[in-house]
Image (cartoon, rainbow, N blue to C red; front, side):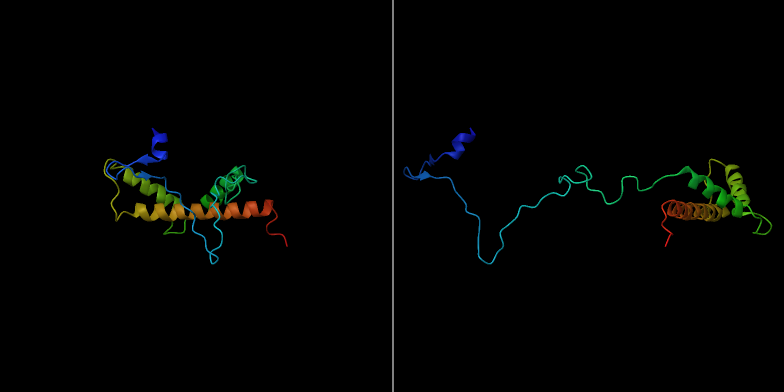
Length: 145
């Protein structure tokens, strides 16, 4: 079937004239540079085995020492009774208990629970992030001159 479309054929109604296949010539000019076919960078074989990566494969370099020391490093200062004689950790855990007392109903937007939740977790994540930077920076001699 495809061979019949590729061969010249007679068009009915044009008194026996035949239609020849159209051959196109690529446009060329002395003003234009020769065209290059674009290559897909995802298909190029390189040092990463054909995969394009922006980061090292183990970019996180996870270490449980950082998690352990970061958690202890946040729990210690957040447990100091600095807010009206109560600690941030104590206020956060007390607010969890208060909200669980009426469990099916979610906490109100005006509840102190949200303030303690955001503050406690923000401090924890900052401590873990700086712990990762400091611990890995020291083990990889990043801070050496």
